[in-house]
Length: 137
Image (tube, rainbow, N blue to C red; front, top):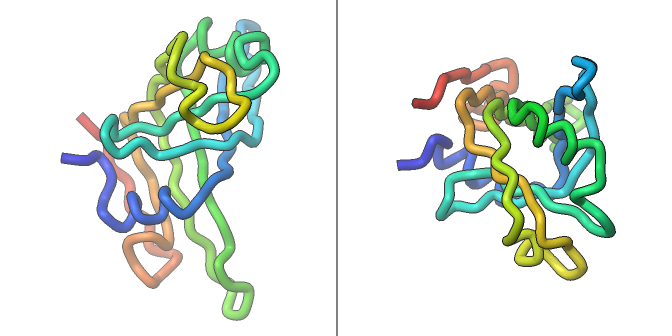
């Protein structure tokens, strides 16, 4: 059984860009936009990169502290103003292989984020003020 609702899974499959928050060795937060994919078989978010992914700050941060937050959101309509999105909190597993499967030119290394907490808005209800938050076992 998936940690995500059917509506959240469908939303994840339509999006390609999110923001990954990590914590540096100095305790400072770091947020960067990244491409991602939802891996339904693993029920996880996968993030890779090009041209030296393992040399990037986000990679160093995750090897030091695997706790991350990942936000995917968009504005499907401006009239009336509506927003929707998902925040995923969890642990990022660093994988030495698998990243090349994310797309052409991707490095071997990648992250796999399994959710421990999911917060979504405007996904499970037409009321974009309606928020759904839950911890995942």
